[in-house]
Image (cartoon, rainbow, N blue to C red):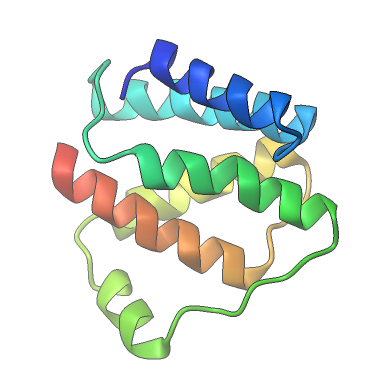
Length: 121
């Protein structure tokens, strides 16, 4: 997925009232940052992560919560060689969002980021 494809995806989600304007803006900035971090304009296997992100931000705005992934899955994620980069990416999201993300959402983002980084680094 590249930036143009992602913008089309975000626009569709916005037009269908699935995500908010704020979630759209943050997600677009996060994707632009991510392509700079991985040094690729075309990011493989990024659809799940970057669709989840604006929907998660919208859920947070709406006061909805998700359950955390299992501890076993999170143990595996924490052992990833990419975990420090993943946590930096999620911290970047929080800085743009101007508030902390719920732990469950953070953990799902960690999981998705590890998958994408495994495919692209």
